[in-house]
Image (cartoon, rainbow, N blue to C red; front, side, top):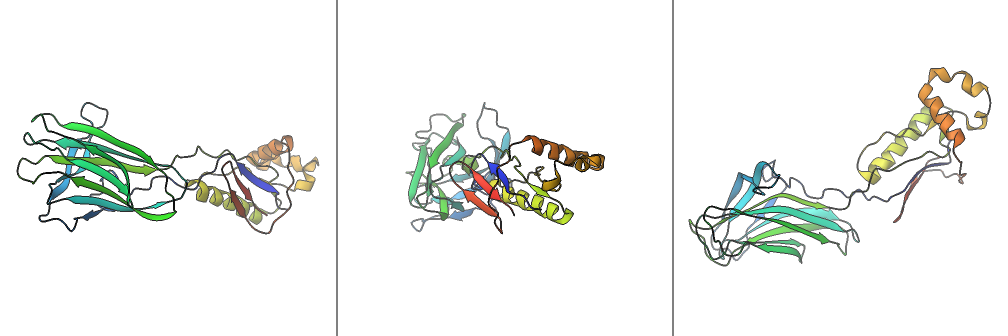
Length: 280
């Protein structure tokens, strides 16, 4: 016979994890669109290079995107991201500026989602020929609409380009929603007396968890047992055939049972506090 309420999770997750693809440029520029504004007169120099993105900090040398821009040769690094209204996302990126000469403008890096500017960082006047400059760009954004939007990272400078133009670097780009802790799923009367429905029930619960959280976790709550015979002695006589199943049955017998009205399908209810999964 089938179960009543199968699972109750204490937090709500909308499967919102890392939104940016290849934010560390380990796969080159795959996933990114390099866009030159129509106002450009010249194409800027850009590419990938190995750089320590935080100098004396803990980060190792890694592959980063660099560009040399001026007022007539700008560059936008863009990628489409899928966002959900009302969810707070955190944008993060490591920035660096490598000087090649004294310069009045080390460059500015500005982040947009659609037409909305999230944050901007300017390296300002270049005062050293031997010291790289490092920065972190971090800000929160809550979209007002759901769906695909364009993440745009704009590189700009107020002067023309030449051999002395500083190189601006970016790496470790991420746009993430807060990740909910793993769901603590506890069984409350999830039993099957036949083997096939037992496996189907387990698979459905695990799939519902995967869709909600974005990560697979085995669900060990469903018991292979006849609910109406759980109090009978004969139910425990063959427990040595499957000790784990017997342990789950014993745990269920000691737990409070909440009876729910049966449904004919799986339903996942989402709210601010929990996700309830019903399987019948």
